[in-house]
Image (cartoon, rainbow, N blue to C red; front, top):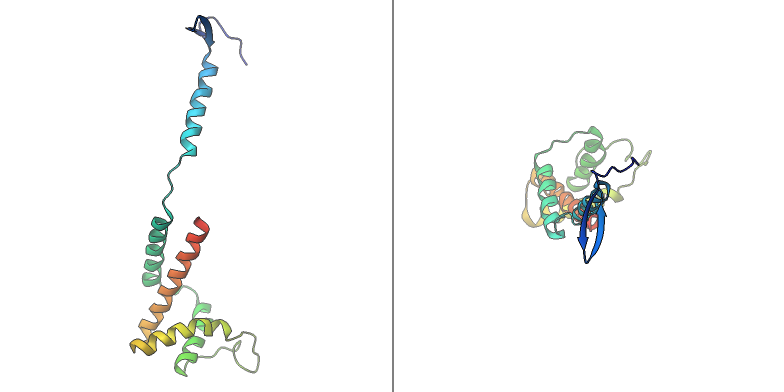
Length: 147
């Protein structure tokens, strides 16, 4: 710490006592003020965060394309086979090798089957229904970890 010169030290009187304040002491007040401001940062409420995250996820579900071929041939096509009785069956799902289980696919096929049975919708709408269902579940999980 550099030596203090007489010019860099201010003094003031409080209650009959002289208090010396140096520029180094005044920076700690500024640091305390900045720290108090940082501790009171604004964060959205849980409901606002959910609405924002759900909006983003739904936009992604509707407008993004399928960017990975494994998503198509390991999940969408076998699920289409489960729902409609026709479609590609990859070698991982074939009874000869049976590397993958249909249990994960049934988890997603059951809501799609119910949606298709009640609304008699076409296959494209079932596809987008499942993607929007994924978006909703993803937003719920993110809000849970946001809290």
